[in-house]
Length: 269
Length: 298
Image (cartoon, rainbow over all chains, first blue to last red; front, side, top):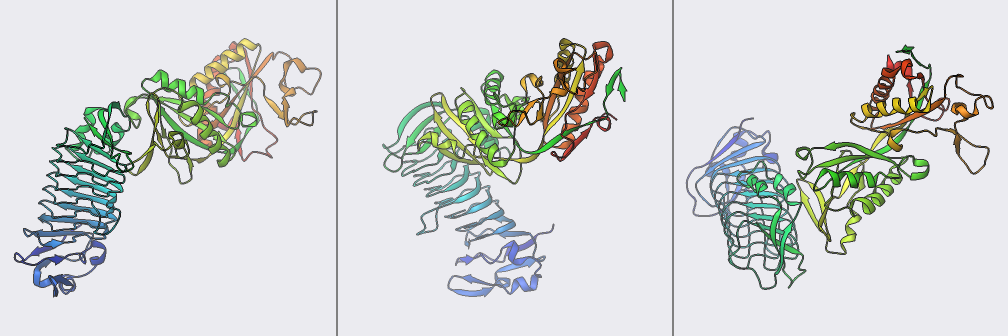
């Protein structure tokens, strides 16, 4: 199936709300129709044709070409289809998405995958703070789906996360898994300070000791957990996370955060 | 129809619709998976007295189980979805949860789901952990040897129970040897179990009894020791009759198992003392599945 291609004409100094560009909303529309869709650019509305060179017609697949990091809310509330971004994405990529796939070849801003409840985000570059976090003011973050980040994540990845899986191939900033309610976060690189702070439940899986954990985490010792092969098997299509399966089911386990519910766990291979 | 000197009687086996499920038990090695499977399927020969009919369907190699450990698959058949769910929960709770190193997974897909770990999780006293992996929910229940991992639900599917055939032989030993051979061959088939002890029944029953409290009683027409006293179906030379009961996930599975079993018995044939193959039915009025022996063997 052919792509609907949106190529950003020039670098922007203001932010653009890209949420109208959803595969399901554009399906069947011609290029001239799509060019008339109004977009918020800063505090004014402009036709999308002014900002983008549009090629093709609306389909299940959208290709966005942009070196600018001002394109916010790409794929927000998406319910299906595929969006591929060649370049960088702005803030709140895939915010609230329910299904479908979004791929980014570059980096993305803050709040990637926040409040998403399904679908898959695949990011080749780095991500900003609050990856898989919550929309400001909401009590739950990501509540389903999978985020695969090949690069580094900012601070507070998985903040208030309720369900789903976040895979981080690089390093992670401070407070990874903060206030987590449930779900799984895997970090292959180094984790920053106060990892797991305020965790109520959920699982952080690390390959190395984080810079620090809250004092309210207790050492649970070496454990053989047979859910781990099952979990790592589910990463089989996502290298390099697929190699975790070779590490077996033995981990060092820390339980916390005891200042909250204390039923979260940090597993370190 | 005569195969190798053994007559295939012009009759049919009458089977019933049941509700079935399949679970996969894995453990640190095959021994402990089998122990759990055998314990769970103990006292599960007939729904009349056991609530459910169950058996180990097959052993599963590590590369084919969900968690990469050796395992067994277990089939359970109940007269209703509710009865099946109750028995499954009791048996898993008492026999698999308690068995060292085991984990439990759903082994069948379907729309109608019954609880597996959904209620067992409360054994964790609040320390149980839910984990959703690839769209499936599992429960991690802390136990003294580590964690008991259990899938939340398993599907139940319509199935067929009560397929059967009777082996009529000159002596008890000949009937037993023939049935053992049949069971050995039938155990290699998927989707079926033979729930009675060693797969073989020596006390086939008829409907009703002279005693009001009993709904079934000995099948006097096939009891050699009653020949001459009741209206017997046995020729003078027949000294022993044994039955093999088959439950399967579909009528095709039961038919294939019947055919495989009878073929194995007929390999011994008249030379092995096997005179006749018959089947149990209730006149065709009770069960919706009829397996006509000659059609099955054609």
